[in-house]
Length: 216
Image 1 (cartoon, rainbow, N blue to C red):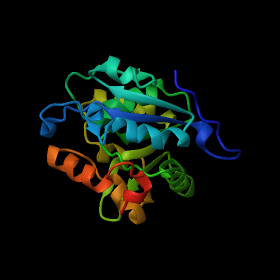
Image 2 (image 1 turned 90 degrees about the vertical axis):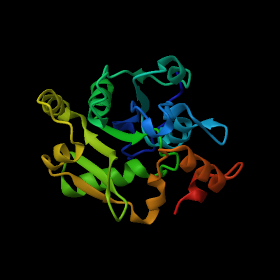
Image 3 (image 1 turned 45 degrees about the vertical axis):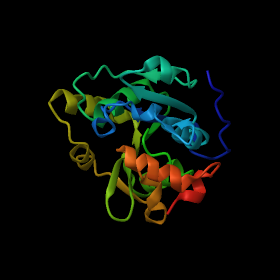
Image 4 (image 1 turned 180 degrees about the horizontal axis):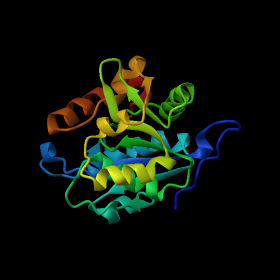
């Protein structure tokens, strides 16, 4: 298993489990598993792992197929058993169930430019409002799969899913979520949904490019 980073004294890192969501069907990518699609020679999810890992005490991967390939990356893989593909909330529930931290931070596998202070900024927003949920906002729209949740919400989320709930925004709204401003790094939420978007990102990155240098 991959080594865990040492949390900085006084930081929230030691209280947070990071979960990367890789359970979607990727229909616009021809059904290929997006997390495993290479971007400049590395699986897309690897870009996310490398940035999220220093921000949390542990990293988990939520996936519903190609489980052995994801395990080969060196992190626990959580299969949510969702063969109906009920959306990201099923993966969020699975991640919260497997997490050990007080908080669980989520990011999708198809956003390789995720920013290096995602978790601390989400936690600051959560603490300022006294909420149990913080969600990223890029200045124009909410980014609901970039979120920090208190793990105590698991039972409530399971009840929502069991009752037929699927809309992530509606569940958030029921808990008075905190909105975290990321308008200064809006480009960090760019996600890859189609082959032409992947090609455009690779051209933008260039060989050996650093993630932080590519954000807008």
